[in-house]
Image 1 (cartoon, rainbow, N blue to C red):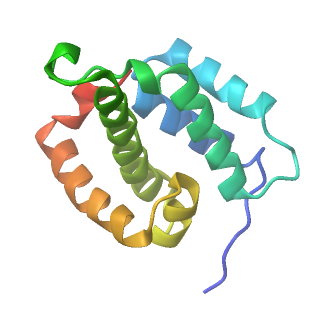
Image 2 (cartoon, rainbow, N blue to C red):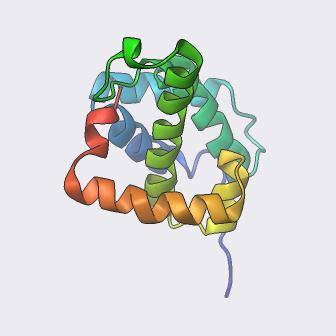
Length: 138
């Protein structure tokens, strides 16, 4: 199978789609795309661009994700970890469904083992189907 290599410019539509699904807001999506483009080298590989997108998202919104629990229910470090975990699960599903990346590529972007990504994709798709995960958007 021939793999088509995308440049950062070719990825702008994919990044905007990811940003919109992650934030649910056009203005926030545009800002996230702009931030990602400013922090990306024009010669970067697709996975590097998407890693930059993930970092920009987590810097801007990942720590503000709303979950259906109160921060007082668990200590701060655990709560922050749950927010990032939720954002990474959502991003994993979107990378798979919107950009068509393989599990190994998603694993490289997220920085987790392939088996973890597969598990996240399985449960993340179920959450999306039940609309629970959408409440975790920034």
